Length: 349
Image: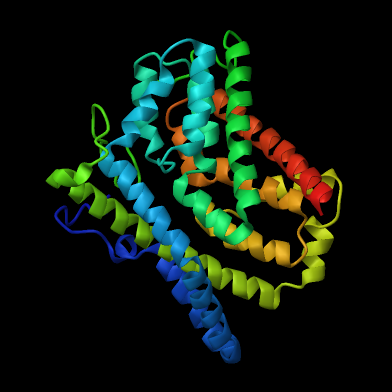
């Protein structure tokens, strides 16, 4: 969005608006290392570069997959999840949310259209809860860093939380919490260059159409840059965390067994979260430093659903009481997901 002033209405975006905050944060972090610990600058940069190179196959597969999904128009298939009986819609919406290529802000206009067409809030809630937790690129990035088992468990958690939240919303739809849920003037704008998806049936052999080739190119480039900038920052932070944060401190706070570390992981997940991609290397560093497996899962689930973009997607369309229910579902799901993953990790250890 252009940042104009009253005195110069034709002025372009301010310098602050034009600077990408992720690249800026990476630059500031490197500068601080140069100033305060020059000897550590080289190792930190090498760590980040090597981590990026190690993740490169996953990044390539992820961005090509998302480009193909968008260029073929596969996004249009998601709308089919919101047809039929309400219970069926909840199941399909939870599955679609856990597998959809939407980012958090792209969900806003899509969901606004669904609500305008009279789709039950229960199905929308199921989609909302599952959608920010997993998508195709995030699955491959997570699998490449934290392991296939963790990525699969997070996907299952996303769908399960969506199902549970949708079912509870359906059962309580006549309660004061969910009655008349929508804002009078919902904000349906997007924050990440939302582009209207292709309509009609998907065209799997899309390369015969110029506009679809352009969509593939734009989506691939956009997602490559997006992943590179956030993963660069994440790997720099991971190196700094491993270097400067005492392992015994992490282990003492969110290590060990029991529900305490899992609850704490869920509580700190939201304020400590940047986005789903950045969180993966950070969780990897926390696990290295002694974070329990259950706390890692609760952290990454709670943060995914309550980070700013995902929360804004819900807040923009529904009243505060419905938003509070969303946050409650997210926190409860994060804790239960952490308990489940912690128990599974203990059994297979």
